[in-house]
Length: 300
Image (spheres, rainbow, N blue to C red):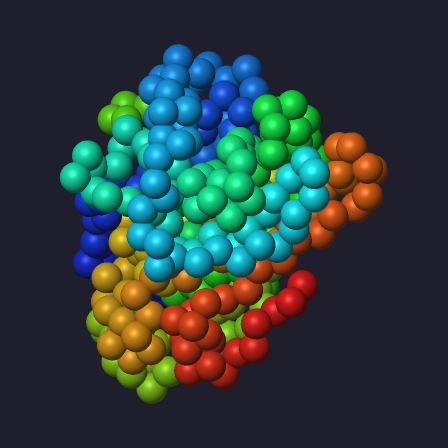
């Protein structure tokens, strides 16, 4: 039996300035923003590029944060970025926020400067790749811009999502008030459903779906906005999600994070021609939620 999904009530708002914008090499932010190499946002992003360069030799922040290296060769290094870690310092992060920056953490692991190619939102975990030289970063950035990189995300969303859907809905170009809308398209495929005997709002039970998401384009918070547009917001999303369901996950599963993972990234290596497939899985908090819902992680 189907039931209408309610409006997203009890919205919570992130206030820690966690939005990541791209440098001139960055083109894909996954759940965040994708910018073409010749983007008209280039001038607006200049300060963020300056932050990248200025902070490249600074301490990484919390030394207790560990990054798992997924791939390492002479040109690229890929890691599994934990939720809550910024890719790099941005002008949007509060000056008082000490931050933990993946850019510096990866630099410390490989013992040399690395160069960002794409971005993940701060609350999103998963596959993140850096170039080990400006040229290497530029080559792979061009593949992102040409839509030659396959990106797969896995998310937990509220309600029973459709079995399959293509969302073609414009989103703002950036977080600034009055920002122009940009075309954005995402694909959704439902992998599993679950129902908890817990009353939430006007319903006597709580329903959830495990979904696979493929952004055809990539814009600022695209996947998060598109799931909310379908009225199936990602659980744990404090910008576009449902506060009641977010609180249920915190209390029942001790899951305080966004239920979105950049699960895989596949591309042809610009130098060797080898097909590279990188995968990342859930952390302990997300595993508790998956177990509680009776789901296994989809390797894909």
